[in-house]
Amino acid sequence: MKTYLEFSILGEIKEQKTKYKLIDINNFDKYNLLEKITYNNKNYILLINSNNTDKNISVLPFYNKIIFGTFLLFKIDIDQNIISLSEKKFLNILENKKIDKFEDYSSDDFDLSE
Image 1 (cartoon, one colour):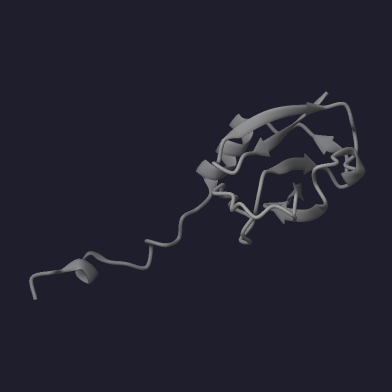
Image 2 (cartoon, helix red, strand yellow):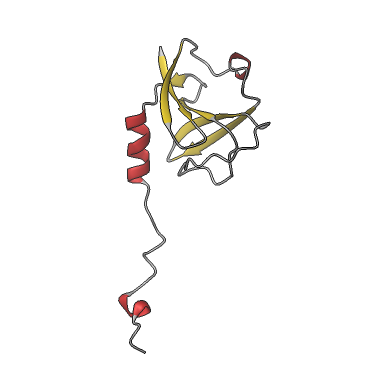
């Protein structure tokens, strides 16, 4: 069985198991939108319920759109085969995400003595 992640509206992550080897949105009846994402030469699929109006607070380093409701995250290979994605592997992706926001500042930018 392959592992994928389910993200609740409140940002809780649950590991789920599937017997399927390939992604078919018809096997996940609560979800009606499939998005393919490539990040750092790795492929992912998001399954989203686009009918939900509750904003999800989860953050994905490779997805900039607002997500409503719970969603599923799968890691796949080139042939669309599911590759197990654990919570620990996902957290490693977050830790390795380079944060560029503060690199453009120097200590002079914060001199409040003026």
